[in-house]
Image: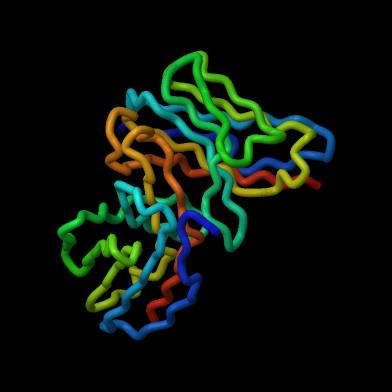
Length: 112
Length: 114
């Protein structure tokens, strides 16, 4: 079983739509969770960290559900510029700060 | 500006040749990483280093080698023993003392084996 799993998509949505992605992780002891954004043929960039209490940054909201072992990303009022692949990243350990596991990514296409 | 510089951006090599990818950072980060990305797959960890003169194998280290002689530099050699070397290679770094998740990436090196 993979450490981190995501629906590859693509999610095709019109501008202004609300879209949500989920990501499941296998290690129940995982401590840290993140969403990264990757544009086509570019490097990933941190979008937001995911905290236990949930967190929001403008149109983006991230949630953590420890009981079901998934994290989610909600994008409201989608823009054309939101088109990208969204990577879920999990750090499973408090003892090794430097081990990160990446999902394969969910592709989002926002259409005019 | 601080950041990570990878070179070359594109590289072609013949089968049986070793090739070295450069990664330099001026962020004063302790930890550095090499990831490989294939189409439709997530990033997979090749090697990582938490401190100078020390490095550990990741999940797919076979056919690769690294060195960490300086804090700023973490070059990756793709050897002829790597069976499927064509991929997008990403170098990254973090401060290394907390799991903040802020992995800073270079722009990547795209290797094609002819």
